Length: 247
Image 1 (spheres, rainbow, N blue to C red):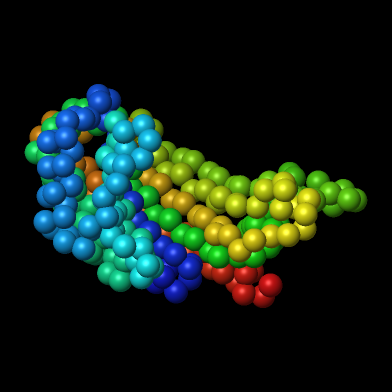
Image 2 (tube, rainbow, N blue to C red):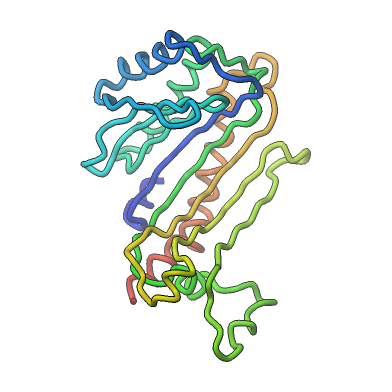
């Protein structure tokens, strides 16, 4: 998986647990979770709150690689940006999942969905929509539309979603997100922004009886690794990298 570090400018691995019920909001419960995280990772020193009851603990970002975790009213998130070792990111996420029943009283029965996500950012100064069309192409039915005189591509964020099991409880979504907007195009001025590719494997519903969160995330992780290595690198990431390199 770490071969992608040489392809994209930034690479990150996130895990999210979404719950059906509200998470504990008491100071004691929330701080207990973050204190356990800091004991495991002492460099996670930056704690702050956002709107709507969201709390975040993270490492300093100046070095370009950092761990972070957050607690929201119905979601716990953990992420690692630009890990030197992919396995360290996986170990961090597994530690978070192991702690949830004890620090935040999250029951496997209370799982609305479980997400494993890989993200890839490419820094590019130009029209992201046109770059994506050049690197990845347009849907064949729409190709001739781009030939209409005077047209300019103002939005092109291709995405696909498909199931990985018969009952559609496990789903995969691959999407490309442009940061170019209509104002950039009108002005003809394109700031240096990050074009993002996201791969998310999501499992819906409560866990199986006796199953832990760590056991439940493993198949999602394996699906993600297979899709990244078997499809995403050669068909999406490398074409984007090459298109940027020749600009």
